[in-house]
Length: 87
Length: 214
View 1: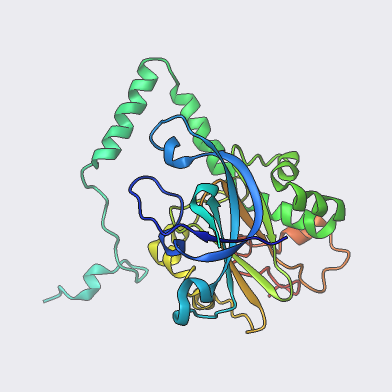
View 2: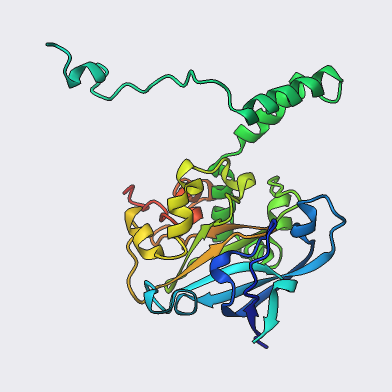
């Protein structure tokens, strides 16, 4: 059961572990990890909510569009659940 | 006049490197002040700090090479690594700490490479301190965008049929690449296999040494 997700395209200030180049991009969940404390709260010594962490696989074509070096190559990154929406 | 470019070269022909006798930065001063206070107040000791630094320096890519060689040799360990690499390597004495380890395996049609675009996350328990280039903006920004060109600069040129998979180490996971076992190493001991495993082959920017000694 492969699930398709989109990374939120927000640009909030703060300590964000979601790389900017992946925001707004769609990928497939590779595996589910965690829960881990939310680093956006941890970084400011606030009580941190435990969050699921998902490894999401993107194609280079999805990330870079026509500028992709090899469109079928892939990239995987860990994205916290609150940064993902169904796609 | 004799003041030509030879004045700037050492007897070995390399340029002299300027001494770094510049004032301490704000954060260097802060680090020294905090360290001295922690010692003065008895929170820690100079001995504890020194032994922690020694422990950090003692970790080397030999740890990772032992893990790779065991994965190549021991199917039960290999299966354990796929389920829980943190636990499997901890049993070998290489504790990943509060992070989790994922081993990504290269095959005939898949080549993995590790980068941390946000900072410099690195499996230090298995590979020691990261090389300077791993922390450079060039490596971090280019590896996600043009991995084939980056790998070619490291001397690794992969056929078009091989998929490259870049792992951006963005959060709580740490990654080690398990290179494919070189052909011609059947019946080799784990120690002999480990000697073929280079640091870069476990980052994905290199390949293991050839068994013929190439």
